[in-house]
Image (tube, rainbow, N blue to C red; front, side, top):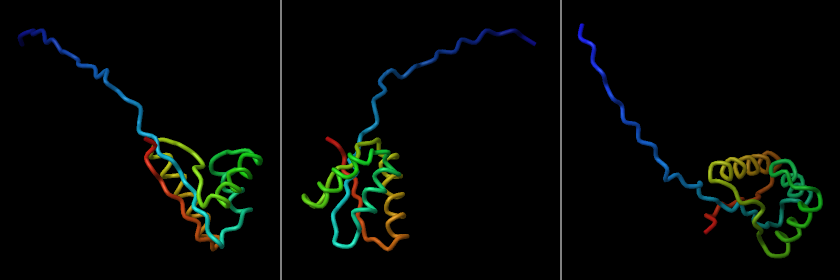
Length: 101
């Protein structure tokens, strides 16, 4: 058996870029309680009581608010988690994702 030397050229991609970020937006409605919104902001997004209450008031007063800016997969997962929690409790809360430009 012949002994052969094989050279392997390895190409390293150094043009990596950060994943696109997406805004997670809660939309106000007349049925979802403020208590549920505050609780979901604390449990799903890890916001403090004070930040959650301030965001809830902004959602109520402005009609919607950005509650987090995250990479797409995480934003989508958290949006689905909140939507599932809301539906399980009978709330019609809408959570939107928008690319953060």
